[in-house]
Length: 514
Ligand code: MSP
Image (cartoon, rainbow, N blue to C red; front, side, top):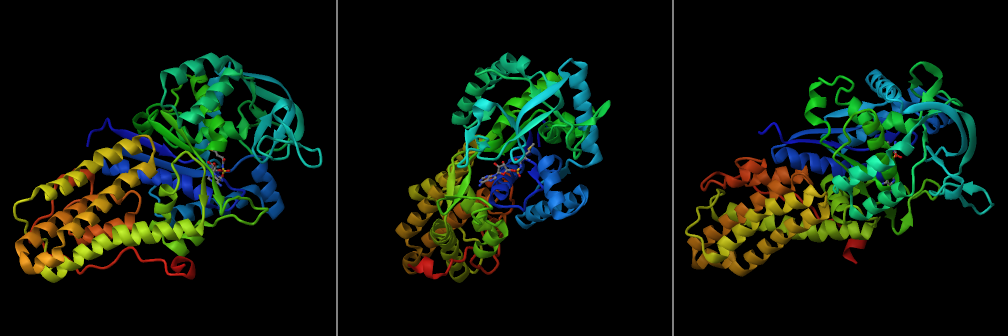
């Protein structure tokens, strides 16, 4: 493995004021699929997730629950850990912003900004939305049904007047624009990049980065009456977890700045504007990419607690299966666009793409081999052109999937894989090995070998998306290796195979039957 191939992938750290829902599950699963893909592709991978535990929103939730903030954080943070485990997420670290390592890193970042003249003390007067943990200009506000002022996100705002430290964000307009220009892949997808560019071109104001009216946060070094703005605190998690401020920390040296930050579109500005500005201002390098994905609706409706239509990821896993849920979320919507969750679409994909296309292919081939080839990998004869064509399609897949995932196009990667699965189903129908069994058993063996080999290649590539089902399929074809280097190690004729069993059950309900 080449040491130069490093890949650092992060989820946002989740607020602990809420229980985990489909939005959290979505970002984390996308990161998990990428982390798994890169590991199989020989990269040295670091995958981070965690919880964002400071700020007014969390303080209010703890008060409402009648618990001390830290005790409240302990229990909600654990829910996010549990969900990651339930989804078989392969994160290497889980960071909490209430940990001492994080306080030390954040205070050090502050000191560096201060030393470089990037921070000054002033007074803040303006609108704040606790739900967004963000300040808004008067001109950005809209009016609610009763004339009340609302943030652009629809959240209520409150007037805040307090002493505050400011970050000289206005100094960073030109350096940011230059950075975006020189790094066209920094903000993805392209439509989002344009949004950020026009925001920055519109002019940047200095940013209030401390609060005095509540106390649940990291104290400002040298002035403990102030706590740091929760976004400055939260964003720093990405380097805390690598060992910052120790520039010699092995993880920091290995993985910064190779980071890809995966975020929802609502928090792009914090990641694509404030974060690189903080880093550059402190003399540190900005990350490699920020990818903003879209939002899910539920059966066409905006998801909200007040509507009571929040989608519980555990319920999805229980109802449809973990691999099916992982597949659906990454296949249904072009990554980056908004998408709608519907039971109908979920069942449709589970039954037609997983049970019929992929599941039946494996079932048909493996049970024929079990019955007609002595339950061993068949011995092929010379390959005919159609065999070569089938194997060629399966062989070309890695490059196609790699290209798609290099730009986080999960749907595209799965679409490419499914075109090979469909080609294999067409091949089996055309070759009709069940007829060859009587007329030409040697040819049957060749066809079944080509199919088993195609299944092996496909299953190696579906591992990042559906780890359990893919492992079960690879066991059933006795695949000699599992990583992408093993794609070139074909099945060995004569190897005994275990009894086949289906791995993609159909979803049997009235809805499915209709
Ligand atoms: N704590 C901040 C992130 C700090 S990162 C330095 C935060 N946390 S959050 O818990 O509110 O949101 C986490 C993620 O969930 C965001 O990326 C957000 O876009 C995502 N989602 C919340 N609802 C969603 C949907 N309905 N659909 C898809 N993702 C959504 O923001």
